[in-house]
Image (cartoon, rainbow, N blue to C red; front, side, top):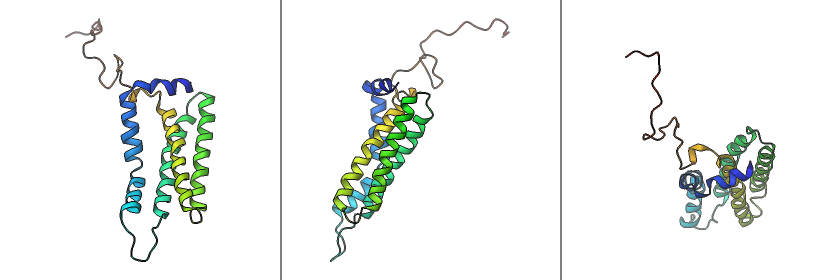
Length: 162
């Protein structure tokens, strides 16, 4: 089951586009905004740059991606997916707590920790949605959202009078 979740989206442009735009770009929008503010907007004269907003954005972005993905995996029927969900969410929770508790003493270490926190969060999302039909490029003939318009229609109902 886990192997299919990793290999099925390999050549699916829709899946990787949604991952890049929806999860990394827009899902991490707070991280991108706080990183821009930290890197390019100078602090007030005489003040040190404040890393706390960036640390908070990294911690919450990791949890916001990993939490729903872990819940999706928990509702699957595969026991290996359930175990993977618990492990991945625990790892992300530990990194998020590290960011909040030790953020003051180790500012650059928490930035690296926050980025490391995002990696298992994104992996959890890939595992949770890798097999989902909505992210696949191929369309089933009987898909409720359209399907193939060139397929032959079924036989007409026998008892229907026109």
